[in-house]
Length: 157
Image (cartoon, rainbow, N blue to C red; front, side, top):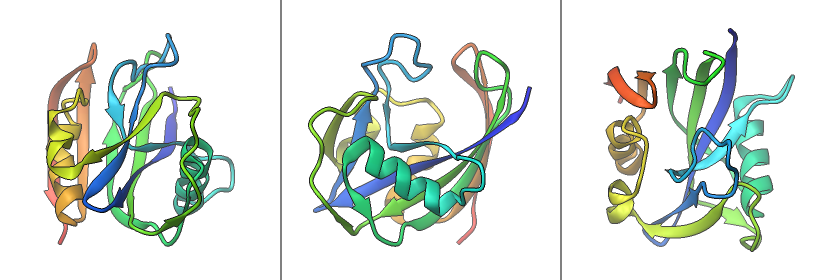
C-alpha cells in the first residue's frame, strides 16, 4: 500500500458550486456520487498546480489563485488499500468556458444550499459545510466497504 496525494476543488459562481456527477466509468470508486473536481498529483507537482491542472482538464476552466480550504486523510481507502492524502481548495475566479464532454462524468452548477442533498460520500457531508462557510479544516475519514466507520474533523480557523 502507498499514499496517494490528490486535490479536490470546489469552484463557485453566483452562489452555485460546480459539481461533477461521476457516471461515466464503470470501475470508478466514485460511481454515481457527486464530487468537486480534482485528482492525483503528478510527480513534482505542488497541490496548487495539481488543483489548477485538474480543474482545467475536467472542466475547461482556468482557476485563478485557488484558496486552500483544508486537508483530509483517508487510510486504506481504495481497493488496493492505498491511503489518500487530499488537499481541498476553493476557487471563485476563473476564465474559460465549461466543456461539454467531461471524461469523468457530467458537470453541473448546483446551488450551494442544495449540495448536501446530492448523493455524496458520507464524509463529504461532514466537511462540506466547512467548505461552504469558508472555514479551514483538517480531517481523517475511515471507510470500510464504502461506508464511513469513523472520522475526526477539526476546524482550524
